Length: 416
Image (cartoon, rainbow, N blue to C red; front, side, top):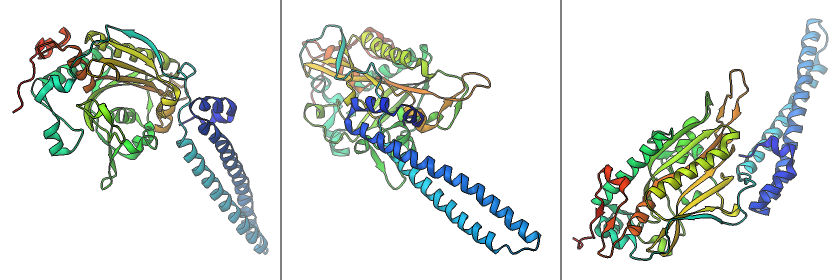
């Protein structure tokens, strides 16, 4: 949620920043200013009338004590009480409308966020073409049987591919432990407040599985639960860094074409997510830190990739700036996103009411939050396609062989 004090202080600057996303967002700042003025006026008037209410009450008590007629003071008291109630109702109504408008506004884009997607660098030898991951995996990715059980865009991972995922996850977690991240297995079912707090509602409602009977939602990323880990708290120290492993669930409404082949875009997948709580003056550096870790993982896995500074129109509602790492996929002969990392500044923390105290006796400040993908199923796609050999086998990078997988995955066997 945007800082209302910033809007009051410099509405023109906020309009200009939001206009980079869409003129429609900038126009809503007028509504914010008007509703805020109405709320403050009604609140101030109600406070003044409460003072009159108190004086009238004291006048009634004094008149009765003196044995005088208090009917006029009582009538005045009733009139003032009615005005206080009306002003209170007006203030609540203005505040409800104000909060609804603020809830629908995205974060202000960082000044260094690109206007359009901007490729920053390319790393590794891209350009190779070949079989896609589904051909290379064979029965180890079983979409057909999964479709019979669960419907389209679900998969059974089997055999060597299961061991590859566990090796990838454990290797990534060990790496993140070395960078000061605490491993977490978070809940994957969350309440609406957690999704509202992280900006996934109302922004991506069409992508989220909802269980109405329990009023719970399946999360599309452990970012939701990790951000909410400290909801309503004042932290004693920052930074705090977490590495969450979980299954993720996305309806992926509207996706079509090659994205629906194999496990590139499925309704259920596993992911290790990085999440940081930091002081405001550290969030830009932390964003670069998360990106550096994502790149280190791709380099050590020997996956060619490029880094893209995502254009402001493509940012999610909570992100002020976002980098994508896109791996070269020989099966599609193009770069495809495998990781992203976003600086959400104070947007999520303000909604979730997460603050920190910079020092003893200091006034609490709103923290900044950031997220970034460590590893996911898309890394396995890139490993299969970039490691493929002419005989259909796949060479795996040396960093994974200490985690229970062979240096080479055999070519797929005939379907059973």
